[in-house]
Amino acid sequence: MGMGHYERLLLEALARNPDFADWRPEVIFSGRAKGLGSRVTLGTGHAMPARALGYSTARLVSLPWPVVHAAVSACAGRPRPSVYHSLALSFPAPDNAPAVYTIHDLPPARFPDEGIIPRWARAAVRRAAAIHTPSEFAKSELVDVLGVSPDRVTVIPYGCESDCFHGGVAPLPPSELKRLGIPGPFLLYVGGFTRRKNVLALLRAWTIIERDFPEVTLALAGPEVQLGRLASEAGARRVVLLGYQERNILPSLLKASIALVFPSIYEGFGMPPLEAMALGVPVVAVRAGAVPEVVGDCALLADEGSFECLAATLRSLLEAPHLQKHLALCGPTRAHLFSWDAHAQQILDLYEAVTG
Figure 1 (tube, rainbow, N blue to C red):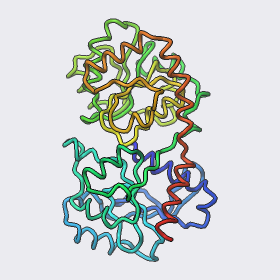
Figure 2: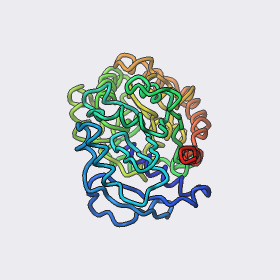
Figure 3: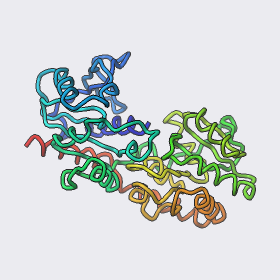
Figure 4: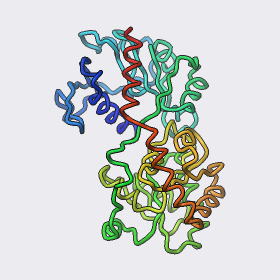
């Protein structure tokens, strides 16, 4: 999932930063984290000490803040860290160090099927030494939902995993596509199935235009059962359910597609559009959430998330090869503006600011 990729890529970028060499990081997992040893090894080859809390933070969301704060502080352990970076609002920081919170977005405030915001969220962010979000949209959500003062929120955009997503990636060959059930040209969706992902609107849009493009298939990568139910509900034909795909296959799969279709109406950032642009793959998305901040003028944006608007936008792309070519050319330039090394440096600057 997106948060897991963020955590991995942040740690790897920090490990590459020479200014981080004097820091001694420890990674703390929620729950019992079965199979976790005393260290985690990153894709860069760096290893960091690690431990599990022994309890799930999901059990804390409905408890009052004094109880939660006392519990996590009692389990904090020693020695006292210089800074405690919580990578999710659901992971409360103890009182034994200045706290930095990364808050990607707040979908539970807008969509009931996205869980709940912790009862103690306002208290946690009030005591935070620093708060980081990836976009101006996410910052506005913190201000609106949690009452955070705008000057307490630092916007640091995510980076692009440029060693995996770049113009030199070869598309998945036709034989491999056929093995996945994709017979020819296809549009690709990558993501989840909750209401904010707006997949049902995409599938209904597809039922409007698919008969005019008989050679094109719509492929959905993500939770197969739930996405399959949505496809049945929409009555969509020529839809291929790919299930979850290995991370090392995704760049080649994306590269082989006509375009990435990203119908989400609420995102704190939007990694899939950025990754597609880095590959030179056209993107069709919705003018909502933080996606416009990420894609700039290098994607085709539906003005709203309705199926009628998505259908018209998809049609305009499929009927215009010159537009596909334009988006493929400008996407990599846009994606190069987003760097994980730059992101990690700004996070490190936050650490240094809160520790004085």
